[in-house]
Image 1: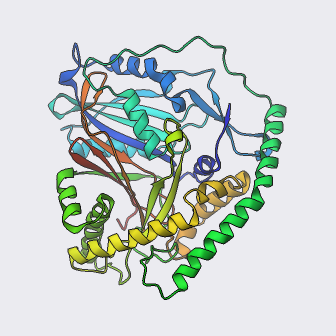
Image 2: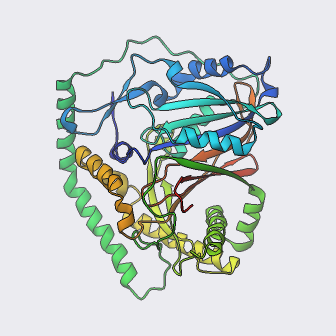
Image 3: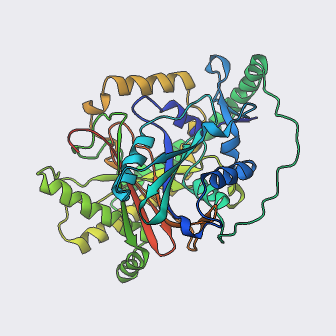
Length: 444
């Protein structure tokens, strides 16, 4: 039994019929390397044999009575893999467009809270004897870094695979009754409130430092602020349906630009998206005079926390300089904004968001999220941010899934009310793979 952290639980509270809080990855695999040829059963068996190595695959949510505290994870005593591993045929001709359409349909359906919060969809019938594999996991169970760790657990470095030590026999986990859950919740709440004065003092001090820095005459760069993003056609209330698009960028080219301009890889990724969004909005006559604002997830996972499946993530906000027509100057402005955003993020405290997440009231948070979605409140105020852009380092070596060579890997993050685009980038071998997710709203 393990209680969800505040930030993990927040992803369950934020989920509504329109906003689904799962992450996913669409993989393209070459079946010619599979020993003995392609077999769906081989994939199913591999997942079954490695279940014990992937904590989110074994456990399900249990809510605490009266929502006295965040939910807990327990090992599912009624686990059935056939509820989680599925197969489906791609429509002809089985190209990337058809794969993206299927990935979008899968992304448009929320996960079943009665079972462990994950699914694997094997998509057969792609061109060139390839298959697609869409892995979908709830964000309460993983973040970008832990998702990559799950990927390397399920995948092998050689087509022949590796021997996996079977799980040791153990007694089924005790499922707590209501009174045990209430007692555990009350003790956790007591400890949390005892920690409140120290957190409050630290927060006030850190905020004062950031405000003083912004008000000073120091020309140091600054990041963007929430609720300062300009409105765009994709900053509105969202529907439950998703559209998905894939793109590939040579990593060598990204690094060449990075070296030439003395910036970070992430700055180049943001500049690519900035130029794309600028052209899209300009062509439609919707380019705002003010810069778009990107929300950028930041991993705060320590070395000791590697291997943990839970979220260790914060966020910073940066300007995308979409008002600047010159690409070189745009990149410089983005690098300046991200540098300031990092400094302010560190000044506030890298784990401030996760620390305050512990104090989210489950019922209030969830009801507020549903009300916000139901009445379309995202249409009534300035956007918190325009979109989420996430860059996750992936493996630089080839991987195999049940013997099938991984050709491409497109990650996908959730979209939020009022910010209908999510761009997630994952590097694999010498390529950066981009998965663009957006809702099916008429203006996009």
